[in-house]
Image (cartoon, rainbow, N blue to C red):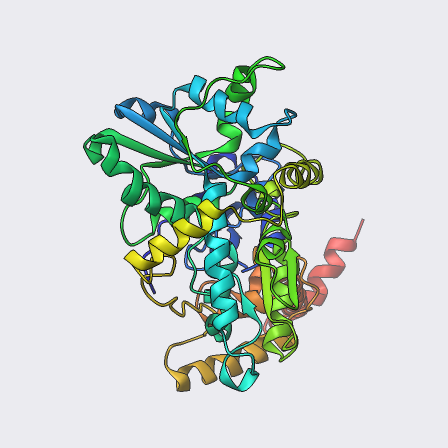
Length: 456
């Protein structure tokens, strides 16, 4: 199993052991023991569902603090398109102006990188064989790191279905470092590159990338208050001399569910959002369904990136704003600048937009790497499960009865963690104690002693 740094962490001192989080985790990555929750890191996909559900705020995303910006002479913001949906202002230009006022020296829009990514996906889909016998269908976007991680650990048989195209935030950082940084004539260590992110999974993805691309990731909800106070007055927009490669309607539209597939414009495309919906869809694909669908855009957050766990606006309101902004900038038109730059980058490096290495199988659902031991453990699991009530109450600290059975087989729990099993055993013990209490040693005259005790 690969070593992986996660951005979603738990603050044990705030945890009340309520078990709400274990029921919402799509990979059953959380357990509660001794009154406290803990995260099984090998299962975690950093989707942020536990952050949303925890009323005690015991789950959080570890991100860059604002003090880090002061360590660099030149600070560059890479704003995710979803940032534009968090404010009531109608133009992204005003939000970009607020980023300058905040202290950034340059803004490099991820929305523009999303349009280049759109070109890469279009090319991959068009070049993919149209017969099922020649390749896996449907093709699944790997732009959402949560979905990619979910496939890795829960649906590894679908790894060949994932398109090997880097997500826009990766591409934006790569382009800046390759195209823009050399022109600054500033040492790399003095340039701070900061991605403004709507979700913790993107922080994790950047932290675990093969080479360091950015110097930090700033959550949208961390910046929102100050950016909102720094927005230009109505009718005025600060000059933006250092906004390189402005994102158009297609790139901005990536922030909402359906925006990516709208831009790619693939035949028989499908868009799904919400991690539970995505998991159900992947289950059906594993069962052999959806072979008539050519391309699937899958996003873990409700309504897309606008509903990320680190955003502030209602996702439905945010999605409506993105649709309006994308329509204003021409949601179905890629500029000549985008097409020319895509072709130029491909000429320089044919694999510029694709993963450096294949996506590995990181399945944690195997009971054992050794097949014989796995079969033996599976038989034990089924025998244990037959004794459990199968009501998935979560009182044992495991999300389901089956997960408890798995924990028992793996030596991480006991049968008596189930309250129903514990009650049955206590009842059996109480009956045995009652029988023992009624037994009298034959050498002692208990009957006479009873009569003496009852005499007045």
